[in-house]
Image (cartoon, rainbow, N blue to C red; front, side, top):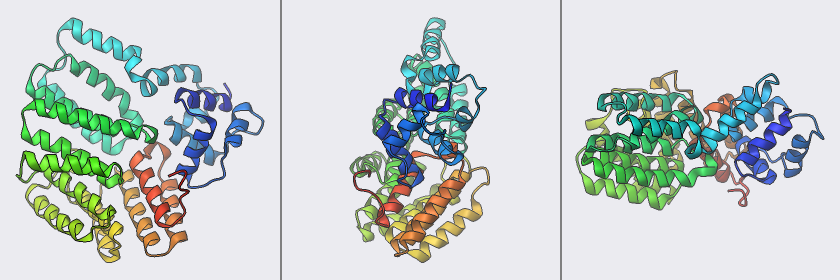
Length: 381
């Protein structure tokens, strides 16, 4: 199968028009040189296949490994079948259905300890791997876990896995993340464990607040977490920092800084020793939260200090988060008036990160830099 045919099938499988694919490519690449006509010519073979630069961005936008587009010897038909059965339409995948039936027929699955081990593994994998790499595994495990929700502790496991599942959706499905966060909150309530109930809501609040998405929903999740418990915890820390970012984006500087001060107090009491889990907030991650907050507020000195601290502590196995810090600096430059420098800095940082490590959060940050620089097309934003 030619590259153009594969691009057409992948695009169609997502329900995208040629214009939609062109818009997504321009958004991720930060360029406006791809149009609907360009995509049409690629797909029909009227022009040569995309060069390596655009192949890399096609792989990122279509959520496929780059070698799928590069390797002519790969069995692309089989790959498409697998993709349609997992990443694109997981609820009708044969392996998911089989897993669900097997768990039901056998009347058992992993025990509680095994589910907690899976939970820990997913927490680490999310930090280091691309979302597409873990989505299939997570979807299967969630379906199996549905057959076992007969005790509060397993509802707690399902709540955390559902929260993580919400983070695996690509940009086009960002609204689904909110639906999953709400599902996770309901599941957490059935766990009868306040720590879990607070963590799930706090994680949703920081995810949305950091991304600058659905600010009202982020604020609601944070307020719910506060009402459940006032004890220092990682969940409350996430909720406070999520709300701080909401305030910063809305231009409420005083509230944002007050919440940052409260967040630091909670961090001193509840910060994590674990360095590479989504369920943890070690010092480097607290400084990532702080870096973006100060960049949004225009506090250059404090932003640079937080970036330098985070970079000095960040494990080398987590390059995606190093890119976060670079995008914060790009935002800081753009907000300080260096519009060209800010956008170029942000785009260069994204180009250095392998496309399979790109995420919705990073793409939203690039968009924020572009808007701060006045370069974002309102019709695309």
